[in-house]
Length: 230
Image: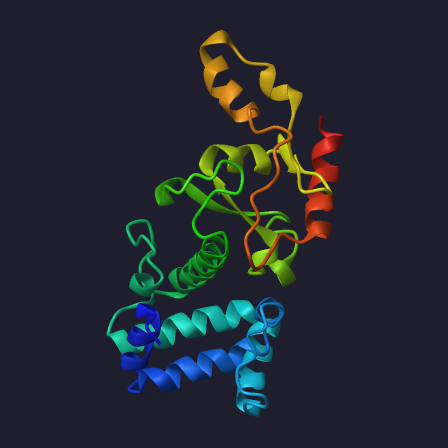
């Protein structure tokens, strides 16, 4: 009940803090991550909670945008402001802009889910500088629509290791140990210091979040693809 975000939410909904807190706790009973922490909520809860949970699980892209739209409406903002989307490069109002905004809202939703799961800390280096953190997809966005917003399909990485991961120059083994390709050593002397830092994390254990740990099948798929390019 003392959580500032819960207090803000209750004010936004015109509900008491205790009421909002209990409702959120009730959703916890449906979440496998919180179930493992023995967070149960009310024993039975309500069917409406189950319907909401199931709909988010089955249609995350549609519901993420709808949530942002409703929040913007309550706050008197536009969706772009609520999702913290840069508007400078957006096209004029119309279908093209609407489609692009929906895409970026979903990307913002995925970023928040992944970064918050990792407590805003790079899972390779431990870096906590928010502007340098990236929510990196394990299985690329374009390849698996069903898991685009799945936080278990994401890693919180610093920008440089994110690039290496995206290019198959870094992968994670089945024992959750980080590996970096020997190809990274093929650099000029003036880049050696940076590359040495990058490679210093080779064979280090991945720093895991408490919840939404990366899906090992997704990691295996990425590792297999990366190893083919080595």
